[in-house]
Length: 346
Length: 88
Image 1 (cartoon, helix red, strand yellow):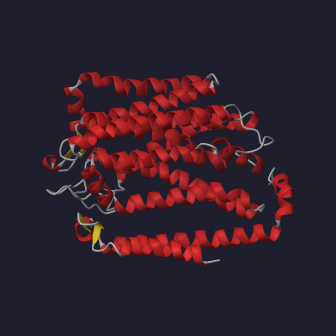
Image 2 (spheres, chains in turn cyan, red; image 1 turned 60 degrees about the vertical axis):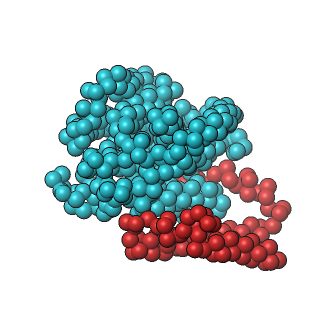
Image 3 (cartoon, helix red, strand yellow; image 1 turned 90 degrees about the vertical axis):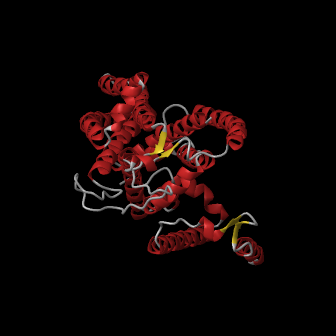
């Protein structure tokens, strides 16, 4: 039962990164892909009907985490208190910028919110990557399952007290940024035509190469930081399938970008994201939050809720998922195709 | 005109404050729910941050509301057209 919920939470986090990932990426390329106000509006229109729905996956994943693994939720939300509040502020600023940009027809107003949209999106991508980096490296949990980590310390690879932001987690943050930039520009390429489409495709190509380089650096570094990840793969060899999905996605990203197949490129970057995330998450399993001292780690056993609650919850979770799936199919079908400014917005 | 708003606030405040010292009445005390390792400095920092954030949001709201009211209802068609684009 714990394993089922572990998979449920992992699935929801993956859905979140996949869906909100492309609108974060769209925000990060926004100042570079769009040359004039018309194109900037096109990008915002492309994600307009869906970005807020995408973000609900984060809330839903957080809620599910709270429900299924309350100890993990308590421990990580107090341990990562400051970074999570910063993430929340960034989400607020980004949401405001999308909503308020069009309300006053002034260049100064629009460019201020464009800047906020860019900063919010890019920093969020880095922070999410850094968060994943922290989980993979392990945090200094004490016997009662709590921890405190400074926001940053000295960024040294040999530091005894690494911060939440340090060389390794920022490296993973940059990998997350390049990945989501590729994912976002693939999405914008699918949704637009003409110059904007060409520019997005160009950005996608550049950042695909950056992603390949960073993946090649980050993978061995991760094995060096957390050697137990390799053992975890060795113990259950069928998990080697997951990194293969990521590699296939990476290859697909290059191939379909060069052949100008935007939809295939978007699917490839999706495969890469899902492959990377699931490889990481299932390497961490059965831990949910690894500790620096392994005996203090939070696992699916010691962090989970009661059996009865989890059984009942599974029924409601399934109903909720069906409703969410229906909603997402409807909204993406409703707004399928290329965006045009001439059509009325949502 | 303000009464519905103040009443709603009052209900919130009484709901939250009147329940003290419990988080869940009779089950879980507030003092038991505190995060043990979050410093009061962090909490103060984020409290000020949130207050600032909501202050700015409130001011923006007033600014935009006043603008909309000044425009009046008949100006609507015009804004829809002009939203087609300011070009740089």
